[in-house]
Image 1: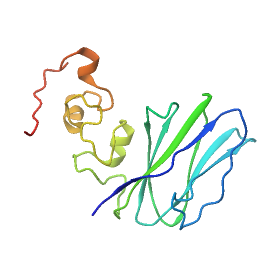
Image 2 (image 1 turned 120 degrees about the vertical axis):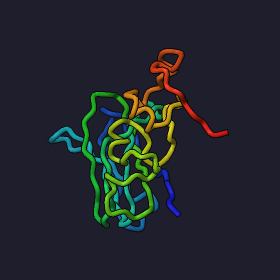
Image 3 (image 1 turned 90 degrees about the vertical axis):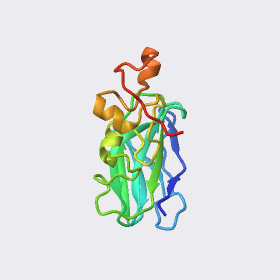
Length: 172
């Protein structure tokens, strides 16, 4: 059975002090998540142990409420994975999410079976591991892609109605 697990999020208060946590190990329950600051290049690096058979997704937030998908899909291959970033904000939080079913094509696969690849979903700001209607506007992800609406922004909340006159079918 495929599973989705949420790991410890790591946050930083920028400008306060450099952050460096213990090194990654293949047996760490949080995939060895660490955050390092490279003062020479002024870049943060989020690193974790990429366990073989897992596929990894990243999210970031500046308030711990509104999480955005980073447009990257990383396959686990028993090595350290890394995502580098800069920010001008005074707060920045990162969390790691992963899927535990092995796949030979993590970017092209479709874990939630909604007809849209994992990579395209995170590029468009949607959840690649479920929640067919990630913006809760009554339009499924595939319907929004096909109709040209944004699957990461509620189309009904923006206008108060269905902007394209789409017929939305739901199961009873």
